[in-house]
Image 1 (cartoon, rainbow, N blue to C red):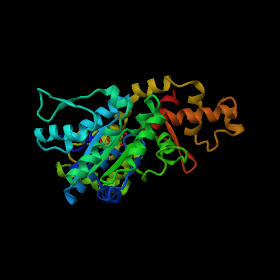
Image 2 (cartoon, rainbow, N blue to C red):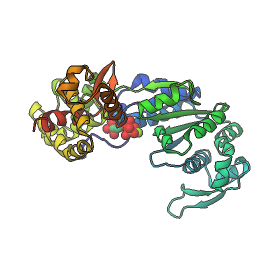
Image 3 (cartoon, helix red, strand yellow):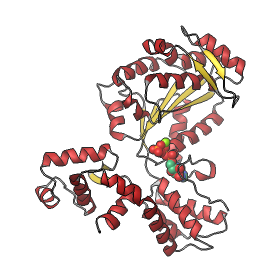
Image 4 (tube, rainbow, N blue to C red):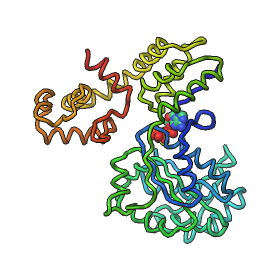
Length: 377
Ligand SMILES: Nc1ncnc2c1ncn2[C@@H]1O[C@H](COP(=O)(O)OP(=O)(O)OP(=O)(O)O)[C@@H](O)[C@H]1O
Ligand SMILES: [Mg+2]
């Protein structure tokens, strides 16, 4: 039987739980063409949420079209414009003839060459003089607005892993170009999301940056224990197995309600459960999860300097003030200026973060591994 949990893929349909308030806020933003910036640490459910809210919004407003652009592998401005133009053309045309006509009519000064992929009818490649596009990308940046306006559509451009624009050369000029065009759009909304909180905060909340006050800034929270419990119970019950409230709570707590890990641990637990789940099974599954990841964690730790590791040890030991004289001496971290540098570096690596002036580990399983495997040995 197929396990009723999923991780590492978008959580959709029955795999998606709760997030009611976030869904309604995002859906309203889509329908009203309000720009949104969505931020959360890795694997907390941004991409799944956006896809889910997009589905609902489309049901409510038939004139909406969604363009999904993932910057995960995009390293240059050229690749960005290519993806954007292609996706806009694709989602605004239902037939090939329409796509060709849109490309011809709305791409301004550029003369596009479209060739179809032999493998798939919905795939095509778009040939443009990209060097010219980069010199003056306005026509590409406004393509969506022109088509939306002409066809009486509303288009939402969803850009995932938005923090990746930081690898583009001349990032600031790029941001300025985007902002100056996008802010004029009346029929297009933008949903920009990603995980590097500090970088994204800098882009969207610094008054000196082009994207300052660009839209509704949403910080996604984890999914609470109270939502995981009924979800886990139902997924077990649907497949003829049982997990009670106590154990469902215990399972979510072991991985601090981290969405990806709750699903992964639930799956490992489900595999080990013949009929009725108990705490021992969950513990076994959890140990197995930690062991599966230990090689990765070891490599991650080996790449850090001794003082970085010492800082993590201080946090794990519950030191609230790692830059105090006491902590610096006990954990041999050099000087207080050094501690500030260590902290910044670990935040940049997305290993720790500061929440409500406390240090937290973003990966609850890594934290567990450090505490019970690495620092003990
Ligand atoms: N609403 C949800 N209900 C149940 N599980 C969820 C939900 N959202 C996320 N998950 C779990 O978390 C995993 C990661 O979700 P998703 O890929 O949407 O997160 P993300 O924040 O976009 O991650 P990344 O930072 O890697 O892009 C999913 O595969 C799923 O296991
Ligand atoms: Mg994602």
